[in-house]
Length: 169
Ligand SMILES: [Zn+2]
Ligand SMILES: [Zn+2]
Image (cartoon, rainbow, N blue to C red; front, side):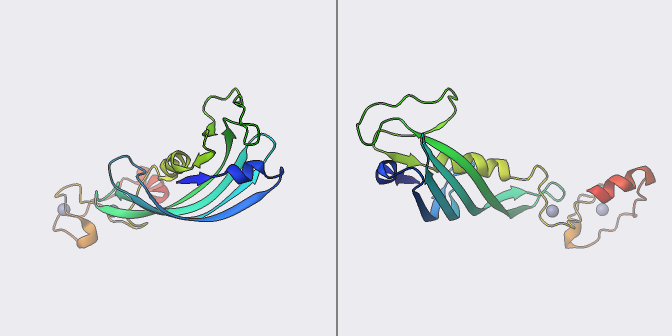
């Protein structure tokens, strides 16, 4: 996701660019590409380019209850500053802010969004993944996927002390 921002860096502070994103990124570093679509907005600030993105993708997860694989839609939303390493007008090197984790724009004035998108996509993955809100899960006794129908095991009574927790689930 390389963007050439040499013109925007030469533009006055406050200048903006909007652009649509439709690309593939390997979010989970497992060789699978994920389709990323959405919009980004860039703002030239005094010291950087402020990038705001709102993107969508889908990622394959395993359900916490039934262990089935499913596609989880993800909203990737972030706002990050990208700092030039070289002055676009003079070509002089620019010292970066203290924060060494800052995103940078390279000497060719290329702003690469890939790493930011990847990091925020990983943050957007729910801790508790469910294939659907009311996933019935697996039978604790026979292991049958109860989304596919009931099993023949005797129904277990839920311990009332846990019922409140089950509602939160
Ligand atoms: Zn499930
Ligand atoms: Zn069963």
